[in-house]
Length: 189
Image 1 (cartoon, rainbow, N blue to C red):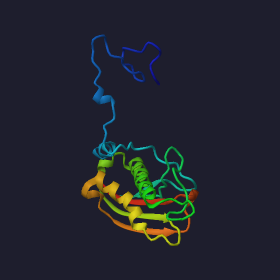
Image 2 (cartoon, helix red, strand yellow):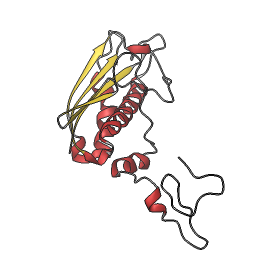
Image 3 (tube, one colour):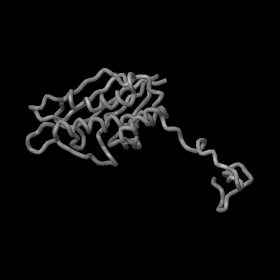
Image 4 (spheres, rainbow, N blue to C red):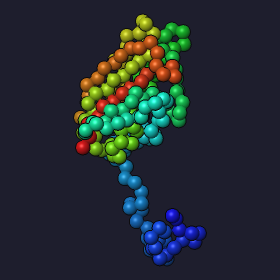
């Protein structure tokens, strides 16, 4: 329950004490700390988004022991896909460079899902495995290069802890006609 208009200077339980005249606010105690991982994302011009809501009957991430498993993350930005279709398709599909950038977006969304479970991305001690799915034209064989978008982002923001095992799999189609989907398994303390 918040303070009434005008506030309370008494500090009673359930109300917030307003500073006395001339008293300084301790802003550092009121602002959430930004993790080193989020600071490195910011250096790349990336702000960690909220968790992408599930599209069906699943949760974005679960913890088992000291591991966080994410569900497949699409490159959704503000609830929308920036591109759709098969990678490498001659008839207006998604080019490999765009798909690589979308894979990085998937990794950012995976980090948001991980943060929702462990609270602080600095608790990640290792990205154990990344699995990337690329909706591919039958002639396209550059899936590893596309999934590098996710791998390189994780390495850049997590350093040695971002080095991982990986699979890059070409598939016929992905949910919402997404060009790429990424799953992450992360170890944490």
